[in-house]
Length: 290
View 1 (tube, rainbow, N blue to C red):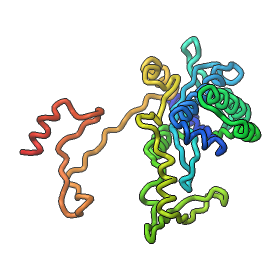
View 2: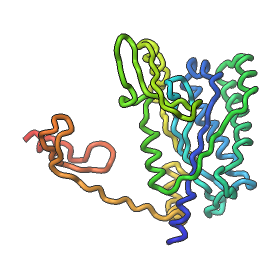
View 3: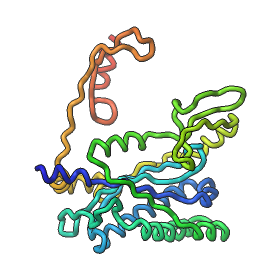
View 4: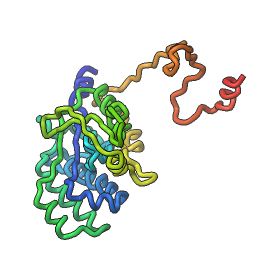
């Protein structure tokens, strides 16, 4: 299916919903409500624009990943989203987006709707001071739409990078000494130039703690045709349009060197793909202990 395979190159878009820093105070006071509202509002905007016949006229979908940090570990709530460049119509047929540019829907219009809906929905649940309300409405909120992904490999690579990130990874920390922590960061005010930032240990811990989510909070969510139940119903249609994804078998490398001691050899004794332990896990443990 050459035509369907080519459709993959414009299959998904990368959209980022960002909140202004004036709302950080509310985020810290009621994080569970605040971040849940962010998810709900982002999907509300994407869903309503998708269902509008002027833009698409179909049910689209979204995978959203919550990030709360900036490069300097400051609080910076935003959602990274994967959105299909189309959707399923009421008649059950696939419809591609009418936009031929890099934007799925008009971002300026989306931004205004996003601002109004988020503040309205949040105000129903928590108190927002008059000053904060005036400040956030005096700003133009930004929804950033990146270029389309260039295929399934790029989508998978994106998911791998963004879904399992924490506020700062070990390789960015360069030195811990004399009560201070020094780490690498990108300064986007200077074009993303890398530089070293040094904080006191207390301030470093304070900033890192800003990004600890409420217990049990789900930071990766699926919507629309990308819900598990919807994907099962629409799999045949999606495969027809995008091309069926074939997962290559992984090669098991036997007798690898131990990454810790660099001397002993590792031997693969079991391999499984499903979530959780295999059904015969007791026998496996007995084998390993024998």
